[in-house]
Amino acid sequence: MPDLIIRPATPADADVLGALAERLGACPLPSWRMPGDIAGADGRGMLDAVAAGSDENEVVIAERRGQVVGCLHVLATTDFFGLRHAHVSVLATTAAAEGTGVARALMAHAEAWTVKRGLPLLTLNVFDRNARARRFYEQSGFEMEMVKYAKRMG
Image (cartoon, rainbow, N blue to C red; front, side, top):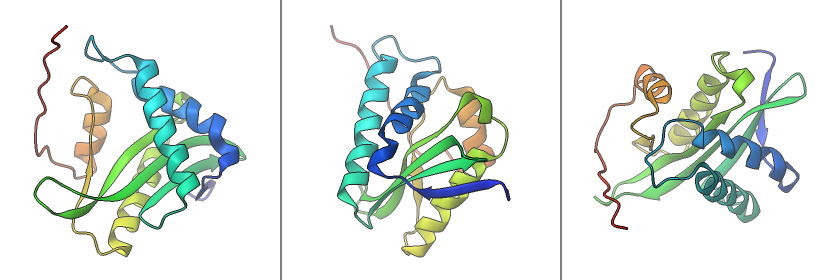
């Protein structure tokens, strides 16, 4: 996508990262999950990663013709089974950028980041009811590995 630029996020991107994080709650959610809580947690996670400047954690911004159209947060982590791997913590686009290839370009960036570090697996989490995102991930070659159940107790 020649008109798309993917660049490292900086502290000056705090507002756009926060706005993009709000998109993560723009899908059907369980009754106990609030969109603002999701946006706040993911926004803070991205800003913390930008501030840390670690090679194990990267946040990038996608721009088209000078406009921010998406972001990605990918990090190296270790799973329950002891496998060191990459994890997409955030993949978000603006509403206007949906279906234009921005998410695909950001996912390609995450895959290249994973390969560059010699990590054998790339994971992500998605809400069960987010059918659009699930289709995208499945079309991108991801397979469901585990299902998390939750029961609200109060």
